[in-house]
Image (cartoon, rainbow, N blue to C red; front, side, top):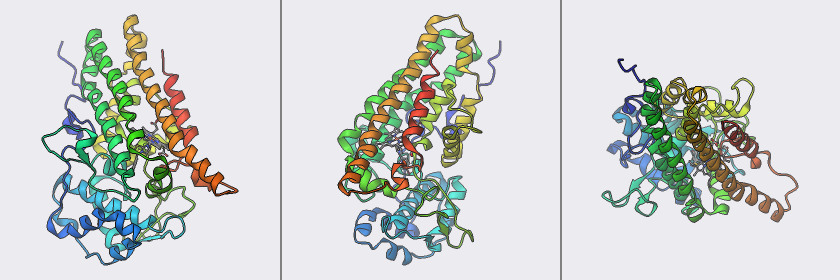
Length: 399
Ligand code: HEM
Ligand SMILES: Brc1ccc(-c2csc3nccn23)cc1
């Protein structure tokens, strides 16, 4: 019987790397000469912000056309650099002096580049995690000690730790992405042994991702994260400091709202949900499902398309539910439990890095009330209830 076409047989068409999954392979670190002013500003973000000089320096930028940017990697580096500058520009004054307007000198090119990439004109996970890395020794391994971020935010090494640990978790989970086409082939051809092999790879890569997650305690300081870095990842949707959103001068007449950074923008975790048939409620009723769905618009379009292809492919869950093979059900449950354990570990991390510092700072400052946004995550969500509901729906998927 001719093999039915497997829509996922060529990962490259989705800009997915065999080895690194959704991570951008060998990101560029330099742009063509005319764009050096952008790179120079973005590279000096921490000191310019500490000296309260960033906004003044942005206003001195030359007006640049994006026509000299060639190819996907140059556009990704430009979106990353302008994304960092934009977050620094908006939040340079903290919550005491928030600017409502992004000057045309960066708003115009940033929106043009965003349109070409199919990304929103705000820094996203695909910028500061997936494209913001290099090896110190190019011939060396992808380990924390041999890596560096291209751009950083104030707070010492906090942003390097947060971005690189997230990247290494992505890399650990990437080994599962490349077996997804084999998993679909196995279902199409009703080959239970190949299906079991593929699902064993999925559960072991999730276990490796959770182990890698432990690095966060070594490289990210909770107070630096909560008091400093988190501010720069905040967005202007559902943010009481920018209730109308941000005015992109020279682009749109009215302010626009865009969500702050969230790893719900991470394709890899949403990919596991799609593969295992885990529904986080209906996008019509359930705010968690709505938020996860909305964050797909903050992913590179090719990655969003991959998630949709996985979700509309042959259902792993339905195939296993209809199978009599007890082993198959056991291996499926091992995948679900690995994803639940990863989300539980993440909840503990969120408690240490957001909930505890938030209550400590409230008590220390004798603050009467918590600013409504304080209890929100980087993505502007009511974080603990969102994260617990996503963990709970994952747990319910066990057979
Ligand atoms: C200091 C470390 C971390 C903190 C404080 C943190 C905090 C949060 C918060 C507050 C949310 C809620 C959504 C939002 O508002 O963004 C969230 C979501 C999420 N985070 Fe993190 N996070 C951390 C590290 C990581 C790492 C290393 C990963 C691994 C890639 C990760 C993966 C996710 C995912 C996938 C979501 C979406 C919810 C889900 O699918 O379970 N986070 N995180
Ligand atoms: Br922009 C940006 C978007 C997401 C992240 C990130 C990496 S892991 C994680 N959990 C919540 C957010 N988050 C960092 C910056």
